[in-house]
Length: 160
Image (cartoon, rainbow, N blue to C red):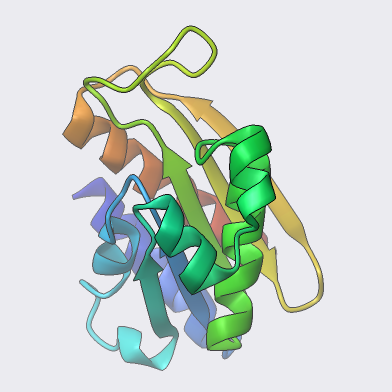
């Protein structure tokens, strides 16, 4: 319920300023976009999104460089950055969000533990920001935390 209320606030802020948003999602599997579109009237500001769960999808769909994936991995700040920049260009939106992470319960390593998530945001005026988080919930909870972080980041930027 909390993420729904947050998505309503995001929607109100985007409508008030006549702004648009798109998403590139990996570990959340489209949950950010789903949460945004739970709000009636969201077609006024949500232009679309792409689930780039595999490395191949990241490369082919949102222009993540293969060298970035080789050097830093799918779950990294550079990958989240390239995802968000790529998807904003595809949909030509004012803002874009990206998320890549390890939702769990498996897949973690010492360097990249379960719950490690990178949330990216970019804007038409050139802002690019990536936040690093390490969630401590189960798979579903970690996905919800990531949605909350992405929507909070967007609301913080758009609300100013």
